[in-house]
Length: 387
Length: 221
Ligand SMILES: Nc1ncnc2c1ncn2[C@@H]1O[C@H](COP(=O)(O)OP(=O)(O)OP(=O)(O)O)[C@@H](O)[C@H]1O
Ligand SMILES: [Mg+2]
Image 1 (spheres, chains in turn green, blue):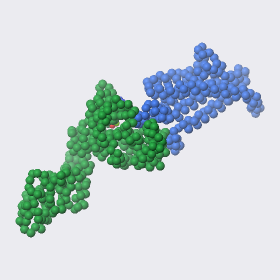
Image 2: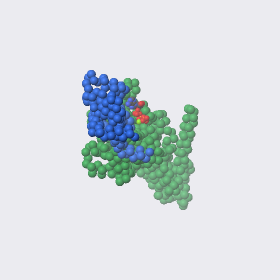
Image 3: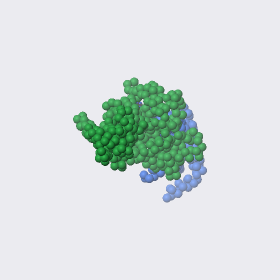
Image 4: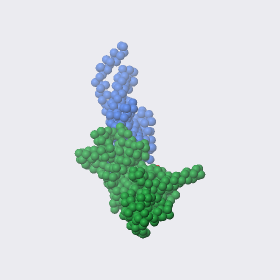
């Protein structure tokens, strides 16, 4: 675990570049530091490997105060990737990756085997690239080597300072995807600086939004999007962001909670009346009427009701037992897919205990989209007025 | 034609003496440049570490370079007398500036992100210096050594005035005896020496260019 306790950095009396910053990063977390240029992201990151020394406060890594550690040993335990890559131009790819292993006196075979493994991991076949020089490679390839080099001694922590921001959008996306894949396998603790919110949302388990050397909000991408703590975070995230990230919108965000329901023992006539009263076309069937969370056992639509022989038949005899259900955390893209593939007009949402929590219908999605468009238009209007 | 033939005859007759003086010439310059490397390279490195000293050090080295060589030779006589020592000392002072300056420039011009990467991954300052900075700056440093050497081969002829020996002996003897052949017998080998050292050290400089860089430069030519 990495823990920053009231860490401050100032270069002069007047201004604090990092201002009493607190941050906890647990093992295996992918944490993003984001904020406008000059807000202290790089400074915060560099204090973790002591390229910059804090003026005040404490930084604890795995229970140890880093100021009491040997900086060289500390840095060798922490991978470091920077925007400009910083490969050594006079060394081959192999030599670049093996700088620290060599200084740590690994034998030649072990070094080469590790390098080959790493090159494979970052998608550059060793046979082709081991003896290449950095100047003979594209920016994207160089940064892959940068990542491989940071992983050379298998450190638990990786610091990445805008590693992809100098790359073209296509290459950037590709490297982001590969980094995610890599992280799925390696479970490193990653601190990643960016000023690109799309990148932050895509990569981060948690995002720290920074301003003037402080963290305004430290939360999951979802909560940053949906519950921005203040106007600045909201502005920084952008109002239209949710709209652009449908995979961040989950079933529980778009479902209607007050599901019209009836119980097994009710009659067809009661069901018809309820539908009319609630203005719905479908009813969920539960064991018995109650305010407690319940399992959904079936559903009925006008189709089932029409098939009923007489008005006194019990619901349980005519209900459709083949209930489509999805979990609360299915994202909007998958929900739409699910509806389309199964040719459904609606689907029930159940919580972790399989209890009914809501319903998503085509109309609820249309409502949501309308709402978003209205928001978006409003924010555009506001911007126009501000100018 | 006649003149030329007699010059060649003249050379032929004194060829052992000329060779001896040339060797002496190489020796004087070699020692001076050698010391200049030993002092100049570390000084050049030092002023990249303590940037505020760079103007002072480069300024002082520049002064030696701007004082006319004849005057400088004269100035050291009261302290060091005449002979090999003062000559080498003055040549050493002359050689210093290009070497310090090129070392300083060579190291300063390395992309800071390269150094930062080295530091960030846990190389010590010494490891960065020896494995990254010096190898990358080496061609530029070598350029400084080449300039110093070529300048010194010329300047060393003047050193013969204070008893250093070398090819300058022939030139000055020739001047005092109004003997053009003697002057040329000193001047031509000096020029040849300077040109060939320039070519040899230029080649070394090229070979020191890091492999990854050399290939790239070729493609740009
Ligand atoms: N060595 C230094 N001396 C004085 N001020 C510094 C130093 N390093 C950084 N600063 C200042 O500290 C502030 C924060 O810098 P930092 O590099 O951490 O910003 P950042 O958030 O990484 O910005 P960017 O997105 O532009 O990289 C800036 O105002 C910068 O000018
Ligand atoms: Mg930065």
